[in-house]
Image (cartoon, rainbow, N blue to C red; front, side, top):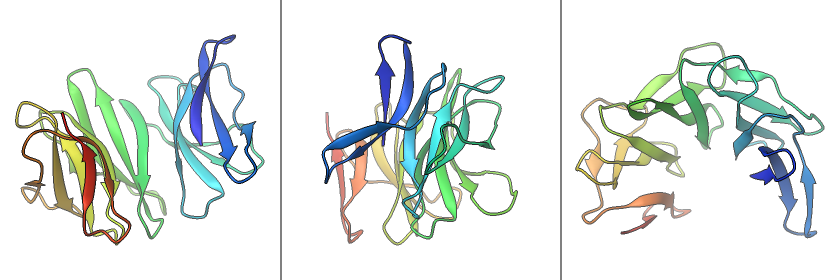
Length: 185
C-alpha cells in the first residue's frame, strides 16, 4: 500500500499493489490528501494519514472493501502512522508540530490515550518495532544530526541508547531482530 499523488486532483490517495499479479487498485477516492499507509497484522486493515477531518491530519482505519475509513485518532497535531506492533495491539505514529516531531504509541484496543515513546525538544521520526515487539528503534537529531536510537517498549524514560556513530535514517529491523539496517550520510 502506498500514497500516490493524482496529478489531475493534486492530492494523494492510497493505492494497493498486488505484487504477485502485477496489478494495482485505488483504495481511497477523497479530494483530500490520504497517505502514509501502514498494514495491520491481519493483512486486511490499513492505518493512514488523512487530511479529511476538521483540523490537522488524523489517523484513519481502512478495511478491505471500504473507500474511506473511520477516524481512529484525532490529535492536536499532524499524526502519521509508522508501524504496528507484532501482536497488533499498538500503532506507532509520528506527531508533527511547528517546532519538531515526537513518537507516540496508540493502543489499538480500548480507548486509552497515546503513550510517548520518544518525546524531546528534538525531532524523533521513523519508528519501527523490533520483530519481538520489545524494542522501538527510531531516528533523532538529539546529537545535532539524525542518528539511530533504540528504546525498550513500553518506553522507559532515559533508556534510549544511540546505536549509530556517523548519522542514520530510514531504519529497518532484520527479521530475526538481531540487527538494524539504516541509511548513513
